[in-house]
Image (cartoon, rainbow, N blue to C red; front, side, top):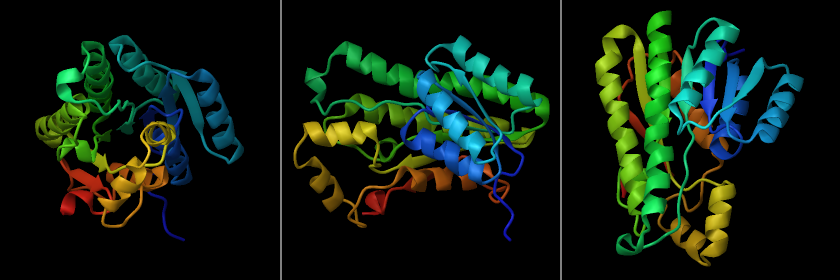
Length: 254
């Protein structure tokens, strides 16, 4: 039997109540991780933790909004106090946004996207890295997007935010490489989730357009993104840091 990817690794997942985050919780737990889940929606977190425990996983949760640095710190402290260390983290929490031309975009939309998608990752990185330095190392994966690698029409704040996640990933990877901490990112293409279902529902024809732009001709299942993150977090990728891995059906390869 093949050894599991994340056996015994204490792993924090943010934005874990739905979508890619919930899929990551299931995949990481299946791969042997001790999972600590963080998100804003306690009812969903509690249900997911119960599901994982029923399947034999060591799982727990903390309610946290990563926009608030105190919440990000508390999530990391919860993991360390409960398990003695933090080995891995998947900074997944993020939001999308409506497709709106840049000159018509409201300030509050820009602020909301930048706060969640950039400040949230920044807050988590600061506290995760501190914990990993104390433990002698670790591995972090940030969730960017193909929007962090190429332009997406009528989504300027989202594109800017996801490019910033790429920048944070590369900067942190360079700064902590010799201290035993690897920092990488996944860049998902369009992925099936509540957010994309709502997005497609409000924009008839958009799903077909997106699929037509993707060489594989489909959207991703959230588990496919989680599988890539699990491998990057694992000891199977020891010489990778600062990598931004597209998981996009070939979208950015065109």
